[in-house]
Structure formats: C-alpha cells, structure tokens
Image (cartoon, rainbow, N blue to C red; front, side, top):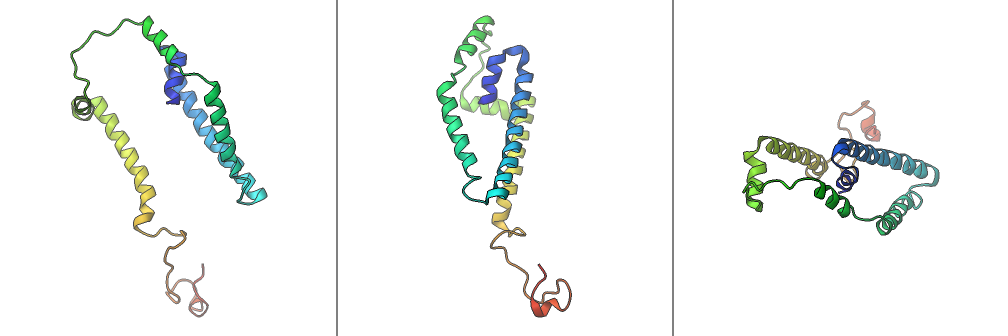
Length: 161
C-alpha cells in the first residue's frame, strides 16, 4: 500500500522513481534495524533492550498514522485530469478477472506465475524445518555417541561438536 500512495503523490510521470525509492527505503530500514538490534544485543544482552526497537517502531507508526493523510485526493485529481477510458464491455467479476490473469493475458499470466513461484519458494524455505530437522536447530536429533564422527577417541567422550 505504501508504494501505491507514493505513486499517487508523484503522478504518472515519476512512478518508477517512487517505486525505486520505496524499495530502497524498505531495504535500508531492514538493514539498519538489524545492525542496531545486533549492536544493542551485543552491548546489553538479548533482553529487554533490543526489543525496545519494536516498541519504538509501533509508537512511531501510530504517531504517523495520526498525522499523515490518505492520498485519495491526489488520486481524484489525477483521474480528473485524464479522459475516462472507453468502456470495453469486459466483465470485471472475480471469476472473469481470475480467468483473464491466469490464462488469457500472457503478460498477466507470467506475472501471476512468477508471484506464485516466489511465494512457494519463500514458504518452502520456512516450512522445510517442520518436515525434517534442520542442523543447529533446537530439538534436532544429534548423531549417537560413537557414530564415527571425528577422531576414534571421540567415541569414549562423545561427539566432537
């Protein structure tokens, strides 16, 4: 939604710039937050100081929600400046839109499939550990003592991890 609001603010001629700035700001914020949280965790321990970053973000988000306004007026102004498209007689019902974006329009079909694959990849990586143990994860089974890992003397004292 934020990228749509930024696009509404800059108008049709600078949509690419708005999208690029939105992406850059998002990734920069994630990186800086990870850096600050890591520094605070190293300096003060895991609790409660690094968690305060989240509290700060919640308070800032609520404050901005009270101060900032919706961009509906910008959209109305832009729509008023452009001629209304001629009605094409296209059905805009959910089933018709699904069929158009999934099968009929090649560009939309490609974008839909790319989004689906992206989401499946993301889901697959996060669900992967639920189906099989991940190395280093708490609760993962360890190899039995004397399983042949490391030096033969390790069998007497346990694995070498």
